[in-house]
Image (cartoon, rainbow, N blue to C red; front, side):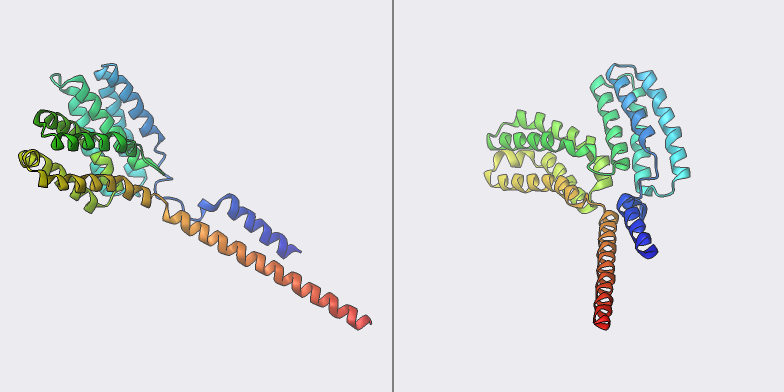
Length: 265
């Protein structure tokens, strides 16, 4: 009886606290302070309170430094990305000649990168899939209609949208996918005249669109945490073994009872 109670207790513990077996690498980071700071900084920039936003980014730098010291699990490439984007954001706020929209975009870029570093599931930057793909499809239409002026406007918009998520993408997507899209963006810039004057080049746009979509598809396919799968498999195996053990003990008990009845008879 004591053995059964112990097994049930262990089973309940595993069912209630399965993630305790192997925590995700970012679960111990306490990232919420960084996200809250960036949310406040973004709101300040949107209302053109650049000095206050700059001060918040100083606080962010201090908190991020503390995080790197106390948590050695942050990948070094993510630290470099956040550091570079943070410096660029600080510079944008200090630039009195930079348009307001550019300052807002710089802070959003950092906000998305911080979220990509700290998010456990789908990061915020994937919400840019629809506007990014829509911009490209409009760009593709301008190639089809040979509208060079519209092409120029849409290419600049596509470049800005892609640049805004680029640091975040580098944290979540395999390098080969990013390099392919980077090459496509460069191709659209250098070959605009060929694209607008030769219909056979239009097939290239189909390939580029597919590779753009692959950035988001790749993340969606990889968003299941391997440690979680390991926990589920381990817990499932334990449940199966426990049930098998209990069933076997019950079988032995029934056999013993049957033997006793035969002996009495």
